[in-house]
Image: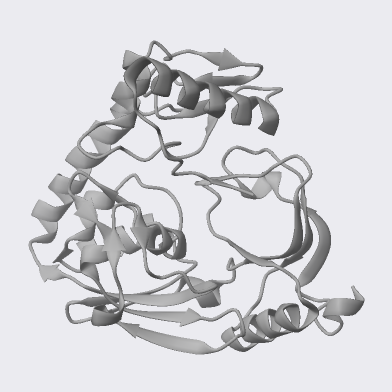
Length: 292
C-alpha cells in the first residue's frame, strides 16, 4: 500500500478478479482501484508510472479470461458513474468509457439516432468496444466514432479526432492506456423503425448464442471471409470439452464454463480448438478474447 498512499479510499490489494469477469474465473489483482474522477484517474496512472508498475484497464469483463495466478501491477476499473455519463447533442452521442454499450444504443434509439443499433447484444463497455472495434454483420462502432479522449501511460490527456483514428476488424489505433470518452456522429431516423431493427437483431443473436451459463463473448476472430464458429463446427469440435470447459453446442465460437471449471480448463480447450482447426482445415484462428 506504500506505493499508493493517499489512494486508500479507492484502492484495494489482492482483489479477486473472477467476480468482475463473465467467466467468473481467475486470480486476484495486486492493486485494484476504482477512481471517482478524471483527476483521480490521472493521479493513479502517474503514480503507477512513477513506481514502474504495469497498468491494466478493466471494463465489463465480457471479453476477458484471467489466469489463476492473477495479475501484478494495478488494475483500474472505471465503474464510477463519472465514467458512465451519456449525453446527446443533436446528432451526436457522447459517452464515457465506463458506459455500457447497451445503454448507449438504447439512448440513441430513444433519441431517434441510428447507426449503433446493429451492435445490440454485444456486451461490455464503450471503452472496451472502441479498443477492440466491436461489431457485427451490420457494421462496427468505429464507423460512427468522430472523437475520442484518451489518457497516455504517463497520465497525459490526448484528444483524438476522426482523422487521427484508424479502425479495422476487431482492432483500432486507440492503443493509449485509457479511453476516457468518445463521441459518435449518428443519423436521424424514426425511433419506432430503429426499435424494430434492434429487436430483430437481438432475437437473431440470442437465438444463436449460449444462455444461462458462464461464458464470455466470442473466443476467436473471424478469419477473412469465414466464420470462426463455422470452422470450429466443421472441425467436429462443437461440444468438445476439457474439464469444466465446453465448446458451446449452440454457437461453436463460445466456450461455456460449467461449475467447477478452471481457467486452465478454458486455456487448454482454446489450444485444442486452435490446433485441430489448423490441422483439419488449415486455418490459424486468432484470439478475440483477452487473456491476463
